[in-house]
Length: 253
Image 1: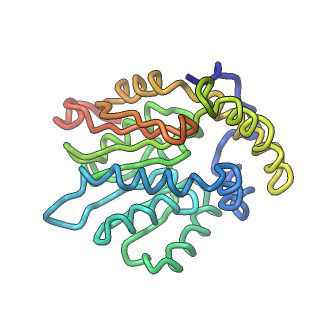
Image 2: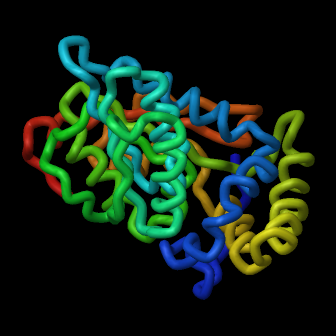
């Protein structure tokens, strides 16, 4: 379980503008803050989308809050014929991501663009799967964003949410709390600005426990499939599929 939620600072609120300010060092900070596990977690997320991949055509995958494109790239590498769309509110992060996609030789299959999780702008059932990594806690209206992800995912498809948590029990609980509460804001202050990374620490602590977030997914019209703790619960992967009402077209964003 996670610690009790606490208010988030209004001036550093997880917006696109906030991530524009830290875009240049975001990837380095991700490696340091996660001790390098973030790449493994993204690969696990990409692999978890396999049941949704179409057998008779190239899979169509969506990466919401794509940032600098790491998850979109991981998905494209896992599915060599997949067409991947990534959207993010931070133009600076998206621009960095496009460069990474080019260098990875994936520009013919991976497209990154500006977009809002609250209003994805794609037709219903456009994708075989939709995923979001380390972004849902920054979305002001999580139910609306999840409902949008469900809306654009075909019946039988997969919706994946990868998010950090702060474990309060288990072998890594004390170390994880020290890392998140002390080292994360310290590294942020040294490399990118303390205000933004104090927000990161608070946003992780404020994110609901796994069972509560799974209920939020249900409220959004999703049918939870699995909640998978990663690295002793430091991170969780939530897997779901569009619910029956959404699949029948009787619910919307």
